[in-house]
Image 1 (cartoon, one colour):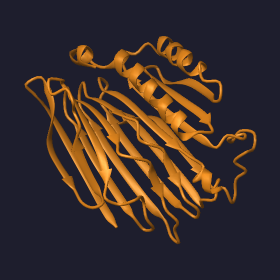
Image 2 (cartoon, one colour):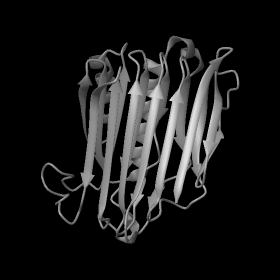
Image 3 (cartoon, one colour):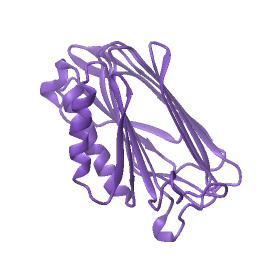
Length: 268
């Protein structure tokens, strides 16, 4: 299936609104903004399919216009089904001046023999704010499908003023890699990552706040590092999808409150 989702926003009358959208199966899109007075737009990506199927080719294009603030969520876990061939997803995001985007998707669950590649290209202005999360599980753990997928490959490129500033390249091939080895997952089964970029952010202060939040969780391993002078990278290892998803959302809330543009602070 060749699926496409296109989203364009615009800022009018002190509010972010959905200017235009296009969806082809399996994609659906819903405006879930509860506070209609908020300048922030909350959108949920949904799917008419139970998950990503063999030979799926999915494409997402998003334009966040000047001064727009968008929270983009997902409906449910993303299941990558059994495949004979492979499936791909390409996401391209362009953010204009003072744009804000927060995206913490539900965990990705690769089934046995899944072969999946996702490529995210995100283009920022220097005044943009980005919070971008990802969560990958080992598979259907309760069905004893632990690392029985063929390949999971996730690439995220973040550009600022057309210069590449962050590249996240995660490749997992259980048949050729010992995922329990030192330097790999070392006994953990789930991993989450988060990128935050904001040119007004104090990296050290932000890292300390995130560290305090993460340090309260005893069943995980984590690391926090500077990606650039105005961005940080968080990686977390754990054993439970819901726990890591909850942690990512807590970090997202913390960073949203501390980094969102002044015009939205009172509305978060």
